[in-house]
Image 1 (cartoon, rainbow, N blue to C red):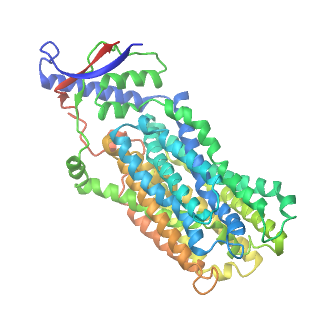
Image 2 (cartoon, rainbow, N blue to C red):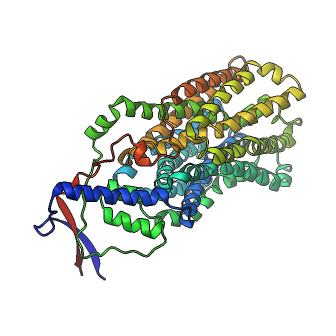
Image 3 (cartoon, rainbow, N blue to C red):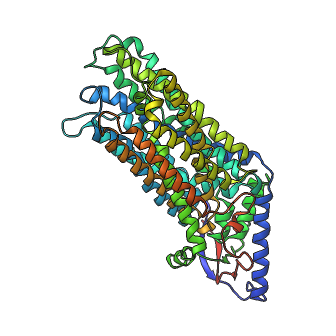
Amino acid sequence: MATYQEKDSSINSAEKPVGSSNAAYILDERRRAALAEVDNAKFSWFHAKVCLVAGVGFFTDAYDIFAINIASTMLGYVYGKGGKLNKKQDLGVKVATPVGTLCGQVLFGWLADIVGRKRMYGIELMIIIVATFAQALSGNAAAVHIIGVLVTWRFIMGVGIGGDYPLSAVISSEFASTKIRGRMMTAVFAAQGWGNFTAALVALIITAAYKNTLLKETPTNLPSVDYMWRLLIGLGCVPGTIALYFRLTIPETPRFTMDIERNLDAAAVDIKNVLNNQNARIDESEPVQRIEAPRATLADFRAHFGQWRNFKILFGCAYSWFALDIAFYGLGLNSSIILQTIGFGTPATKGIQGVYDNLHNIAVGNLILSAAGLIPGYWTTFLFVDSWGRKPIQIMGFTMLTILFVIMGFGFDKLTATPTATKAFVFLYCLANFFQNFGPNTTTFIIPGEIFPTRYRSTGHGISAASGKLGAIVAQVGFSQLKDIGGTNKFVKHILEIFAFFMLTGLLSTFLLPETKGRSLEDLSNEAQDGFVAGPANKTTRQVLTA
């Protein structure tokens, strides 16, 4: 079977341009024309496919991350002392994924800029699938406690989840036209809300399915709960398995092909095929003319981000995400504790009936929080992100969150004193969830996927997202260590006050960022586009047919 093998050869005299400056101008104009086709393309089935393929990944990510919020309570009944995990065990299973995610965001963000978005896309999903399935099969042993095994696999799963952030963000932004880019990226990220909701729904269904069996057991021997948490976590690999094929077959983004592989011809063909639904082909017998354009090197990275106008953007993206995730994950991974603290998740009965009631109440409570706050917030952003802009939404979100956490924190005792007041607290809590998503949780994902040059776009997004996960780790460790100061969950109100402070600092960091609405990715890169292509590369690549 014939295959194509690439080799470098110097451009011969017949292939040299007549004038290098003229050749540079022509290549520059070809690049501009190709980018204009992407920026002005009408919404098509391919755009919808990108949203679906990327969105399924975020659905899986959110399901796997937030399922542990409920599963940790189940694990406590089966493997904990006194019906719950100790502080270190609970912290371990909850913080392992954010730690892995931080590592994956930096690693995959860098790799996607080096070897390509397409080559890395799908690898992170394979890691998630394997690690999720392995958790469901984990066992307890004399040498290794099951919590230690789960912590290990959740870290590995987190690495895969981390890779999903920069890859999905950059792929969706680089394929999107300018007018719909915000909505495309929001639609991808909004799948996170449905993943969170589904985790709670599956927990509720599983709890109801095992009710009769569970009520026949004793509080010291709960094999049914052991089945329940394994099903809850294990089912998280199903949507990822469905999406894997499409991720592995998605084409490379034209911007990567043009600006990093420096192949204008291949990029032009890809644009015609995926956006204009044509069947264009490259003549493999012709040499591939590379262009001379800025390359990603350590020296170039320092030179670019060493300028204040570029560094402040990277810092603004990173710190805004860090501040937001302090509260987002501080609440999201501990919503069962919040619900119990205000009396919503505490069962009225004891014994085995109390076990069932507690699991049922936590699942219902998380469903309410997701449906009332998280999901509406994402889709409200979807409606306004391309008309209002990213920066106004982020400023509004941080402002509202600062106010809400001040009210919930300083008014905590009064808001939880009576059943009527508790309802008001739940309303404020849902409102906080709403403005996290109709606010910085969504925009901190969108802006880093738009605002950096192509050669650093995935790296910049990975650094920003990793800063967010650092915030999640700080929040989870802090929540775990602080919540019981003065008594069980007595310090929760002060944690909410601390969240208010970080929302205020996130608001201030937002002012470092420019508005990205309606601007091309090249305009946002802070690099002059006139003369971006310096000319043809010194060498060309010829396709040689070999047997």
